[in-house]
Amino acid sequence: MAPSHFIVIGNPNNRRVALFQAALHWAKLPSATVVSYLDLLTDQQRLEKLIQPNYIVRIESPGEDFAVEQKLIALGANDKATTGEHINAKSALDLDYEHGRIYYPSQWYRGFSVFLQKIQTTFNNLWHIGTYFSVMNTPLNILTLFDKRRCHQLCQTNNIPVPPSLGPIDSYDKLREMMINTRQRRVFIKLAYGSSASGVVAYEIDGRGLREQAHTSLELLYRNGQIIFYNSLKIKRYRQRSDIKTIIDWLCHEGAHIEYWLPKAHHKGYVYDLRVVVIAGQARHSVVRLSKTPMTNLHLGNARASVTELNLSAELWHRIKKIAVQGAALFAENLYVGLDIMLPLRRQNPVILEMNAFGDLLPGISDAGMDTYQAEIDAILKNFR
Image (cartoon, rainbow, N blue to C red; front, side, top):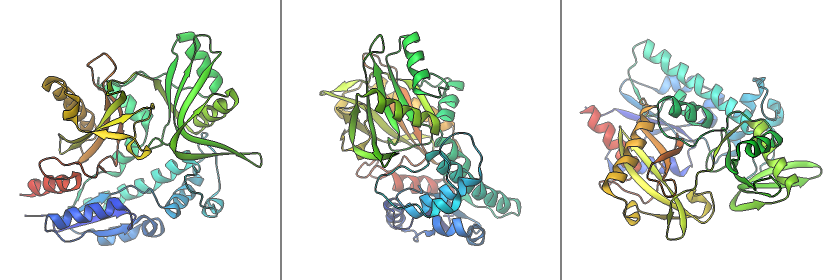
């Protein structure tokens, strides 16, 4: 018996939704009903009315839609958390769109949390009254996967290798003090709730802390006395202490995860890491991400290669896939998880850098003749047989 219908929670015009619909067409299944974030942010009960027995629900990324971003920031306005800049709900809805500008990331995450927790409550209510349906990726797992500090902690607790963390640090000055005292000259600073390299800084100092530089996709601008941050597709290098301090203090205030900057293995003059997508407990699609900078994200214009081009031993590739499966198993209720994995320079011990709730967007990458979305649907169909 096949699932009777799919529902996708997402932004209707997003390419992720289009690719999933194409995969359903490939499998000769009806197109999914798309329930937009905007509709659900206005009327959460709509979802409860749509879900029927034997349905499959997929939650897609809320990104690339400014109206959705505004509403999520507004939804997080009532949370009186101590971290991050704050804006009231009305002002959030009045924000002007500026391409690439980063608005209130901590408050956005709080709003996303409220939204997903309501979705989880809807699911629980339906299950409680006997409406049996399946979920491809659970709301609570998505929330955890968006929290780099929580993911790092889960990996450590389960003996899955990750870069060592410097622990909670709330300012540029305290970070420098710790780095000098521990002789740790290079760290990665990551916005705790960011994605796609947003708010990521590769920071290094000399032995005495006299010279420093930061590589980042953040673009810092000063406008009429206001500090503004943008996501840039070009990696910036900052050397002025005042700029670096401004960036790091802002990241710490919004919530930062700080870890050792482990040197990555090289391939043909590039540093590299790997994105591996685990589907139904198996490491499936993979891509090598090559870069001349510390950031390897493909959307930054970095090159990509296949795993076969690395000439890894079969044993090493097995260990990479094994650690990917172990990381994904922390979120066993999810059908799929995307993981970023590195090989440290001159060592052969795979390390998980990040885990991604929506990490299955790998256009052009196939496994067993299927793209990621087709493989996910294939796994579901096999489970229903």
